[in-house]
Image (cartoon, rainbow, N blue to C red):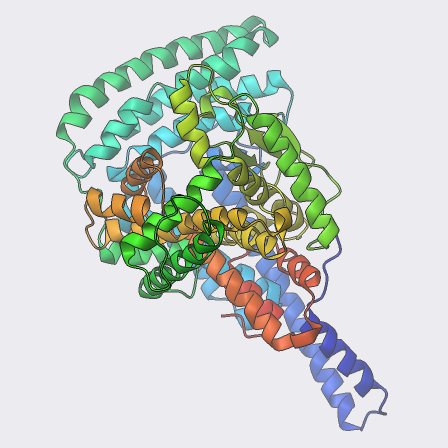
Length: 607
């Protein structure tokens, strides 16, 4: 796709065209010579930055081979990350070397797009150094190693980027190295620093790597023969033994002696948040905005409840100035109307397919954004991933060209009781399935990924912003609702607002837990009372908040910056604002942090 110029740039070109009709004064020649010299300097600077970007990409992907496979660079598919002391130091030395070269550049001479990429690269380099030297997740978080072991197999086998025999040979090499990764884990982790929840979680997940082997590798082992097959079989046998030994160490050494605090504290949280979000919003601003949004959205939901419950028998009291109890009861009663409309347990897949088709037709009818020509491929969610959500978007790595994007849909597991299925489908009711199709596929993650993949910067593709992607998906939920999706159904807006409350609550919960020392009771009240989440869903999120930090706010921060950017562009353009042109332009930049999109669109300094 050809990149579209922003409206402000088109205006600048129009003004330049008008000025060009005036014969130049003699001084213009000197100005032209000066401009030519500046262009030459910019070209030299951009060339130097392109070389530095390539040097970083090549080195970083070599140092992170599991991640390299995920993003689509398959030169290192037979390797594992080295988390030994020497391996970690090699990574730090490399990052510091590239950072010193970046510091020596005059980034003001770069093109505006490269100024953005330079800041993205700087954030990554500083974050990598900080994580190894200061945060030291390698010393206290066993999830680091567990994730690498699972990713080493899954990233190779889940997508058909190469013939099966080739991927099996790479998997053999990685399986041969996983016992060494386990040894590094036992050497590096200090049980006194490992939180109990982290140790217990990884102890439960340890056998998961063997499930991946049984699902992806052993059923296809017959595609290898001779020495290749023998090496694969030996690697599987050795891995099974290593996983059993690792389980024994986890159960008898790590879990009993884990004494760390899962709360990382204000100082580390603020530092991690800066690298994770690359946003202008501080922790304090995020808290203020999220708390204000929580109140505003609950008030809006109460207004909808007053409308949909009007004249209903046994409707709760709904005064114009309700108490907290009255507001809560009214919203819950209104949500019950939405929960009642849900698919049968065997109809979830068909309902999801219809939701995707309906969302796609609506986007085209309303001309909200350019819809890619390549269709998203609907698949059944793999069995080991079922039972958590109805759907997700599975995009190929940014360097894997020509592979399908999957909109994965989960049927209700056969072994669930009717009671379990009903509880699950109350949360993921018919309107929520429509909303998931919007968020995950159209015009959410799938459409955004297809647009962003057209941007030419490989560095930006590899370092695409999570807050941009998640924020865009949440932004589209409101955009579709505002455009009148499902004929302006008020219960759909109510469900959309409830889903948005989850985004808001995530941001509040994360710093509540890690900075403000929230108890489980405080966290559960926020989620089940303030955000109307089901108890099981909230309980799972409480565990997630203990196991992670600075990730849950990405949704809220991303969508707030998307909202802010659109408002700023609407203010600037006034009646000339065109929603489709705006959305296409936002998506044309390759998913950088949203603050850079705003600066690019409004021709502001890149900061």
